[in-house]
Length: 427
Ligand SMILES: *Cc1c(COP(=O)(O)O)cnc(C)c1O
Image (cartoon, rainbow, N blue to C red; front, side, top):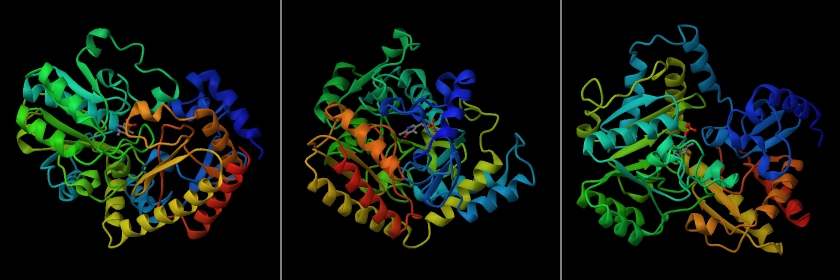
């Protein structure tokens, strides 16, 4: 496959953009090649600057659950743009999207819109601290919650890809307020909570960890955290930026029937535009300015274009059978991939929840970040490059999830399975 244009664009980008990219994992560094530059996309397909076509399982890292350029979303954005891109004043659309979110997540009584998942989690943590009057927070190794200072401690995702557990530039004085526990290890959390009695403001987690591949919660883990937080007056923050509207309309909380006190959303609710949101119990949310004292703001928060794209997206996700269709496609791919992986001598472990999944290059199972790190990332890289050569766009890291969209056709899935068979054979 010819990548001449992409190579030239990357060279030019590197002169003016650090690493040539505006978000680190886009650089393909861990898979040993230069990134492809994207020209356009439609449905399940993405096209690079050299005109190569790929079946896309990145989906902009989660948002494109209906595939790229869904006509209803495109129409909503165009119509809205014609009447003003931003006012910095309230609009009816913000209330409309807030009502839709609240309907899908019954524990979200009130919600505030922001412009990214990072802002959502950062603000939710500030709110939890303000509400409880406590400073410490507890997160899990390998869970990524955006790039705010106190959250870049053992944060999985891009950091795992590049082998940096905690980012330079985070003062030790900040990091000391961030406790990190092992994902799926409830006993360890209980010990940490006991050792930091009445000091922990919140426990934040991904209800399915999608920034170290795809790690579902073991039975009892979410329930145990819920009970512990209630007992100890700790705010449970469920970060559904990736899983929200992805694994069910009501996210992982609907799927596992465990509810957080605060919930973070992003990715899908923006339909591909920059949106995040955090919401939850009225009593906690009312601590936010101007109602309460916890400050949080944004010039472009609740942006009209983003709200329109979000509303158009959720209206389609709400339709009867949407998630059923997504599940059938994901299950079909799973069956085919398990078969070709099984025929290969390479050790792999497939993990999936609904329309998010990961193939770990190891025996598995993977229940924690330490487990994920046992993967053979060299072999993953080869597999990734083989798949790309065969027209399949996967996330360029072992520690990221793949995403199904409803636009993926039977033919796409068969082609993917065929490409995987060839890619395994070439390892
Ligand atoms: C992507 C992601 C974020 C950060 O969202 P951005 O919009 O990239 O800032 C936070 N939490 C989780 C679980 C994510 O997957």
